[in-house]
Every structure is written in C-alpha cells, then in structure tokens.
Length: 456
Image (cartoon, rainbow, N blue to C red; front, side, top):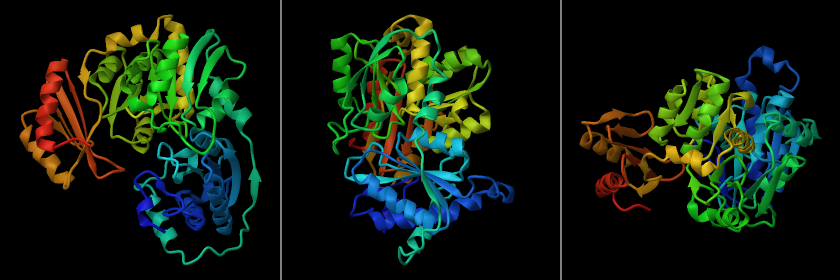
C-alpha cells in the first residue's frame, strides 16, 4: 500500500497503481476496527452502531473498490449498508438516517478519472480527517499483512432516493415558480441525482455532461473558469436564469449569472447570508479565510455573527457545530446548513438559491452587482521549497499590518489584505489578495509575486 494516498482529509490515489482492491479491503477492515473506538459504551449498544454505510461515485473502478472495501468491513465483524452510486452529501444523510457508526464514500471527487479514493465519516456524518482518526486508520491498514478474513458481518442493499429527495425538497419554497437553468454535471454524480431529485418541480434543466461513459469531457473542477465554458455558453444561448457546474462527486458547485459571468463562491455566501439571517436573526455564519471582506460586511450588516475559519470542510463543519451557525460557505464551492446536520450539500444550495432568487424577483447579476465592491486575485499557487520559512518572511515583511495565523498567514490593511497558506494536497503555497481597486490589486499582487516567485 502506498502511504502517500493518505491525505489530510481523505484517501486518494491512482487506480490500480497506488490504490487497488487489496488496499480497499485493508482500509475497510481498518476503518471498521477504528470507528467503534469513537463511541461511548451506551452508543455501541444502539441499533446501527455496528454498521457502516458504503456508497460510490460513477468511476468504472469504484464498483470493484467498493466491493473489496465492504468485504474488509465485514471481515472485521461489522455490518454494511450498501447504498450504491450516490452523490457524496447523501452519505451524511444516510449515516444519520440509519444511525450507523459511520460511512465511506468511494470517490476521487474532482481528480482525473484515473484516480479513486475514500471519504470517511463517523457518527452523525462527522468527517474523519488526519486530526480525528485518519492517521490511526492508516496505521491499522499499513500493518495488515494480508487480506484474508471471514466476512461475518451482514450486508444489505438500500436505495435512499425517495427519502433523500424528501429531505432535499423540504427546503424548496412553494413560491418558487418556473425557472430555466443550465447545469453541467461534469460527467459526475450530479448527472444521476438531479433528474431524480428535481423531477416534478417547476425547474427546467438544460442538461450538460450528464452521461457517465468512464471519462470526463472536461476536468470536474468547477472553480477553474476554463471548465465553465459549456455552461456559460448554454446560459446565454438559451436565456437561462442562471447556470451551475458541479464537481465529480457533486458536493461542490460554481454558479454563473444569466449573462454567463461566474459568481465567486464567497459572493454567493454573501448573497445567501441575509436570506438565512432573516430566518434565524443574530445567528453565526461561517466562512473561510480566503473569502472576500464583503462576506463579513454583509453578515454584520444583517445582524449576524461572522465566524471566520480555516480552509477545509472538516474545520468549517466543526465551526458550524461549535457556533450553532445557520449557514456557511467556502471559496471552493462547499456550502453548509444547520438543518442538514451542519454538513455541506450542493443540491441543497441549488434549492436555497432558487428560493432566494424567487423572493427577490431580480436577476442574479443585479443581486450580485453591489457585492462586487472589491477586486480579488482568486487563488494563485506558488511552488515553494520551504513553505514555513517563506510564510515567516512574509510575516516579517508586512509586520506593520494586522497579522493573524488562523490558516497560514493573513495580513490586513485598511485598503487591502492577503492570505498565504500551505495547500493540504500539493507542495505549494496558495495566495489570495483583495484590494479596494483593480489598480491596487495589480500593484500588491506584483509585489507579493516578487517575493514568492513565479506562479504555477
């Protein structure tokens, strides 16, 4: 087993060179041995406590990996509920619906088709990360000498589509009328789930890349503008209300307005925050350190409590629970909801966006326009040999600003700010810069690039 497949938040590797069926068996067995250790004695006696939910995405190798994973789980004496091919957010719903000790989704999310992996969660759908158990699972899996075992745990197949549809559509307001939207599923799980979830609603969807033929027609990473070409074109050509592009496992999305212009996910957070604060006044709203200052300003303006947090779904979900937040958003396209177990969901984001637009009765471009009051660089990556040293140099160079180290280093001035942090997945530094004017942004970005080197 290649130790490099174990990341901070999940397990990802090239199939079958780095991650094959034998590895899946060991990871399944290791997870089944670990998850009960997170439970109290009382919880271990509850129905579902000795069961793990397993789902998968549409990749051709996800099915054999899921079968091997389930065999490993059952060989550890744990039961399995096989919920088939699903979007990743449905796993959190399944774990809570069946009250199991956790779940595993077989997916490589936005990575190229040759990759696969596992996203693991515990009770309540809480993510298992390097800080909460993934390191222990790694140690257990790497120590296993073979994949021989007696699969004594029971297994059953469940289709949660009906229950999941009720859960998602409970948030769709009756006032939402006919809307036409363009949706690029990126040949991922949104192509299966959206027709099932939204059938019978007044929403007309123009389907782009909804098929699953074992390849991606473009990279399933919606935050890269080059991957939005098809949805932008469809929105303008077909006069849609807006467009969406999903990632591979359909837990993230990117929005484009009716003119085909991308809407940054931090701006979407700022747009939706007042909508949630009207329902729960003075509540907390969580956002990540890369987000525009406009997010904090809109939360305060509408009486909420801004909660700034580290980048990463595990950190944001914990902040959601700790602060009893009503809503949260990340620049990467994850959006979180108190009434969805404080978890992220791209399909529920679509529902709330439909609700918000229906209430305002204005095109999304007009609603977003007042929020575009700063100039932002977006996320820029730099390959740096010693990331910690480079961030310390930045801290000293900009010591006259307001410095914090919540995630990497953030330095704030009245007219501009930047965040520089190490990536969780690559040996690079990520830089985000925002300024009052485009001219100032160009000046400050050039200044920082002199120090960090050529972007990649």
